[in-house]
Length: 209
Length: 306
Image 1 (tube, helix red, strand yellow):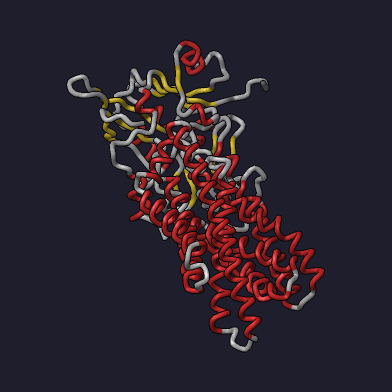
Image 2: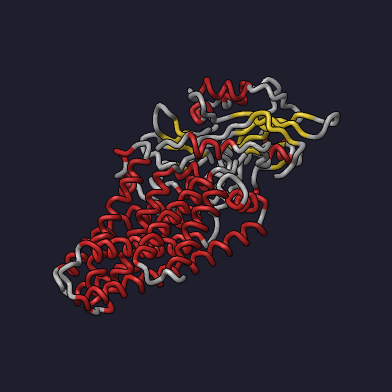
């Protein structure tokens, strides 16, 4: 490994998450994310029969994978991986073919309806470059989200990763996600649906033909 | 995951990225590749009675393939930036292969059509032999577009390019049969009775070949679904979506029954001598293949990812 090669990652501690959506709001404000699309959101599920029932949260954002399928499949190299591991989309290069959205196993990319290009979570690269933390991390009231360089052994994130059992979303996709979860619920991490297939409804009635 | 005690309170699902434009594009390239292959077969065999078929298909292939990419450009969010595909190519992306193939293949097809129409046999044959791999790759790569979009369980299978190629052959033959039959019915009056007889026989033979191709297509679809149903949970979900879910009416009803079984019976059954039955079968086959593109492209994306 190259000396001091930065590799930004995030740990989300589900012991601390209260499902308040502050990360969603911070992200919307910081990145000017339009209505109907989200770069960050908190998935909420209810599990178990009454009375042994509970809510589980799962903050979702781009995993900024080590081996991103979107970058591999982008036909114009508009999606690329920065040296510090952040996956970004060049807004001037993107032609909006949407193949990256179709390829992403995490459904974190979206078309910006105003700019007509693909956007996603960039770990707030402009803030990170200025030495700040991403907006969602700064907005989190319980410090459930911890951001940092996981190659720096003195950073809080690498110590958390070293001392906790962590999981990532869809490990079997071989994408090498950089968002790690502590104590996340397994059902919340899988693609559950309660009988309603939102996607199919959209397929028939909201086709953009 | 099938858990009845789970209720999703809030989750975000973004709009479908690939819509009907893409399904339509797959349909048109399939038609083009199918008719080009038939044209080359007719040219290579070089028999006199194959001439009209060879000419019809030679002109169809480039025309269809010029319509097809219009769908792609219309689908782009930034249509005026389409030239980025050629300047900023990425060799790991199947779309990059496609943008070069979609440029080379119509040019080749036009030159081939000129050779066929000016009766220059040797260059037509050479171009035909060179063009078949190009035609196969111009349609085969669309299968890779779906297969390499790893996230979608319905797409991510090695059978996808082959299924696309075989259904392209089916729809291509179907279109050629319809046009050849129209020519036989309305524009073939001056021909001698023997010529008309041999033309009719040729159309019947093409239709029979179409029925055999449908059998191969059905075999591939059945094997794909069998593997989907026995693979991991996402693949099982994808298999059940097209067998019992929201896409079952279109998949089982239109694609399999109307688009495969009925044409096969019409072409191979007691009505095999009837021109009407053959034409109806060929139209049904094209509807079925269009439905197949729809089920694959749209259905594959409807399984939620989160």
